[in-house]
Image 1 (tube, one colour):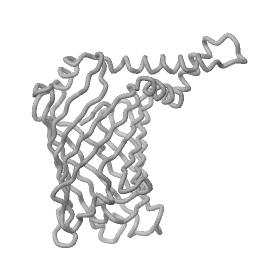
Image 2 (cartoon, one colour; image 1 turned 135 degrees about the vertical axis):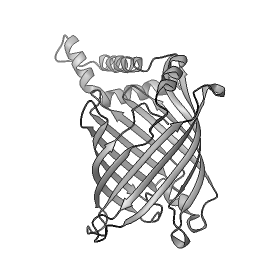
Image 3 (cartoon, one colour; image 1 turned 180 degrees about the vertical axis):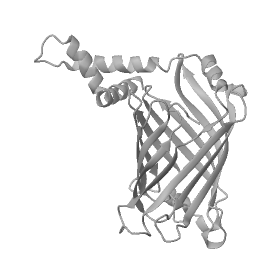
Amino acid sequence: MMVTKNLLSATLALFLFIPEINAQLKASRTDSTTWPLKSLIEGAKLKIAQDRQDLAMTEDEIISYMDGLPPFSIYKDNYFITGIPLNRSIDRESADAKFQLSVRHRLTSSRLPFNSFLYLTYTQKSFWDIYRESAPFKDSNYNPGIGLGRYIIVDNRLTGAIFLQLEHESNGRDSLESRSINWIGLSGKYFFTSNLAASFKITVPFMTGEDNSDLYDYRGTGYFTADYKTSDNQWWLSGTYSLRKSVKAINLKFTAGYKISEKFNQYIFGELYSGTGDSLLEYKRKDVQLRVGICIKPDFYNVF
């Protein structure tokens, strides 16, 4: 296990930190005709060790810091983006806008059993046909939730966090266009370095709406996400993989954000989505959609 973790860390460092490692090694290299593999690996390990120092703090410090934050804050990305399909003809019917509002509110301090805390979340995602004549809303999805969270501290280092959540999602319609689902979710986040993190979520559905009993066949029962932030905090890159019934049936989402100003957390934002289930109303339709716009992001270390 330890060997696998070291190999993974070294591989990630080779791809993500080559420029910085390169500069360090050039300064110390005496023979310009050689490039020892051992020195490269040692440089990668040094870089990872330096980044992990940014996450080093005791559990009491983490709890004190979290309890001192405003209880009401951003949960997921808040964005307004517009774009075109890449797998269908482009016209007023297929081009659209999409926006998301997402907030969370911590109900307790981190002093519940096992130093956990209770919180509420709410996310609303809407699809808007702004290029049609009357610019109607096509679909809106409402997703409230309540959960328990706990930060994981190992050897005085913020390793990640784990969460257990009960959620509901529906589109507020009736009859044949009604879509609703409830689930229990287990999620977690792991910090490889102060700039690289991975998260996952596994969901168990229950009380699914009669008109969308096969929703999870198209949306999937969980996801895996990787987030990378550059050292200057200007770029934030993210990729999400959702597994459906088979390995070949997957949903993919890639996002890229460029920070407009150092003083604010506003980003020029782009999203590429390929798969099914992005919208509850048309969850069976395969979409390959490219959209761009503006986004307000949570803090990189926000994990609930």
